[in-house]
Length: 299
Image 1: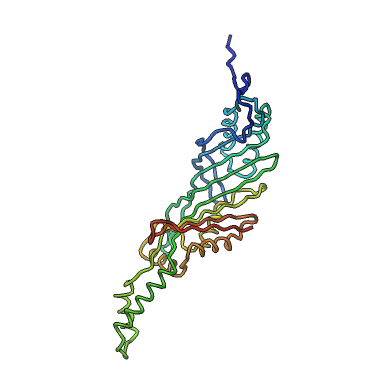
Image 2: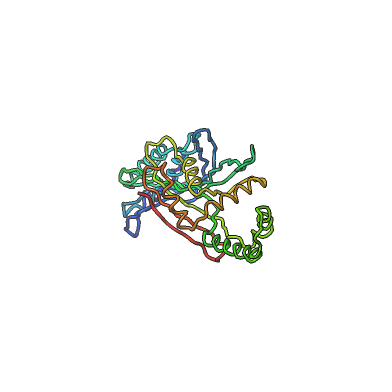
């Protein structure tokens, strides 16, 4: 005869009678499939899953139920707003004996995209974009936010102006009395001295959060990343040759930006999103030991 195993979460009462806002698990390993257009790839996600515990006398929830339900996100179907909503509804239903009404899931993973070089044909490399999805079902209302982080390069406009002034002064000092200067001589001088001063640039990060529609067919992550990179205009590169590096230098020179400029570019450039968008940009300063940051929102 098989012994009945005890389940103290049901048979024992909590000694401290308090409802809890969220109870569950954090950092679960899970494979998830991302499919958008021609892109289809299984990625390693870390998942948090919780439900509320409104009954103060209930000792604990059934975490194994939540764990098994997450398999619904790892069964070969692409991750969509619809199946995230379905898992949340199942999480609430699985805890009817705890009177749970709310559930939430957070997924973190790195979206891998192959990016072409700026100039060199058929040259490309892989780039990793951190993604976080936050799905909530509260009192029957489903919401889903997606956050992506995109790296780019930022060149300081103030530093560029200061550098240009030094080069201008050096040129005037070298040729103040030369009234017969030819374009070729100017070009030769620039070749030798145009880097007398150079503006400082730094790797930078844009963190953008958008609200996704529950009825959307996919997560729209690639389109969002493309829009962010187009807005900042200087995304970091993967595989490059000298021609690509030169093109990247030109992009930086043509897109000088303070952290405020970058935030405004992103707010104005996120036209692909219908709902609210939050922007946080961080310039990892090469001049200072601290970073420059800006936040913005598009309603």
